Length: 422
Image (cartoon, rainbow, N blue to C red; front, top):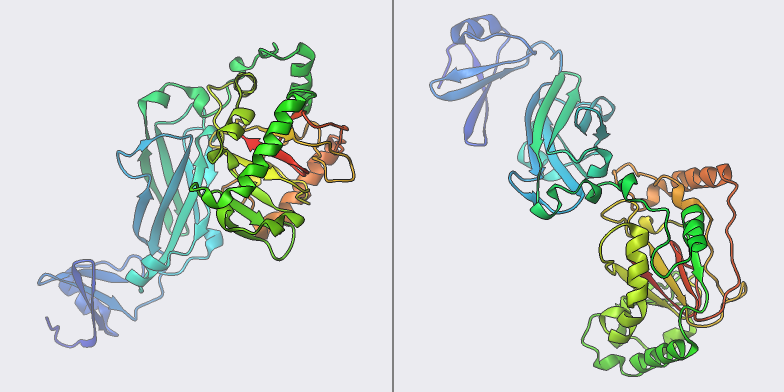
């Protein structure tokens, strides 16, 4: 196609299946009149003989326009089986926009969650003439009450507002259980769980941890220590991919397979991850029927499930933290841990410490919407935690304890012990 009196730039390309031909001219009125177009947002375009014609080098654009938007997740008709859903996608504009002026939220009638904006190099490569930005965030459906079947993705930018409706479909097993997404106050019981005394339950509710001295017999503890020694001796025969973090707390820290490490690492702090996967004896220890019954009652949930376990032989030298920094639960407030002392622990050999009442501190949400620790925001997070601890005048406590004790808490600095998250 040629238009008399106009200079073609020679710039011809494809966007999708549509061919774009670019022309430059100082006199727009003739071509606008020819094509019956309107100069509204600083540029004009139209179809002529089946080709899309775009004209540039015209007066400056007034406001950016949203050219395209796409939702990568959740995919249409995909069934959701957990209380956190990934919201991911991208938007493309016809000109750059300061990120401070681009706001993307997901919301229902009453609540809204702001999504983080990030580059999308894959989209920018496909559309080099457009300004592309992505969004990707895990949204905790517990923020919405009740659990929504529909959410609205709202895109606000200097040129206007655009909305996309997101339909959420849940598997049948959870579709009618609001407590799956948020703790139901009606489910909370003031009565002690089976196997617990009422004063223990009251102490748990107030302080967030519980010490149960003498939970295991001396024989049980000796048998487990001997069993772990056997695992070390026969580790090369293990087929289960159990890992070991060597030299923890040092710049030499690394992760290796248990069946490949040297026994010399035991001279330095280390931890064995998920040893229960390779040992029925460890599983029986950390999840015996009495513990399972107590855990179920304390979490107001069904049968407890092991998320991870750590075996320490020396102190981990770890600073204070929330376990959610490393393993955020799928359901908020529904993760707890047991700490089993396999030898006597004193203040000198690396004990666990805990801040009473700190379980009531609201989790710190990082800019990416997650509760997992973001190193770049660590200082801000700890400033928040310290301020909350000061409000409650909370001090880290170390109650003297002997082996055979069971501790339920949410952080660990230990000696010979097994720490299990549920």
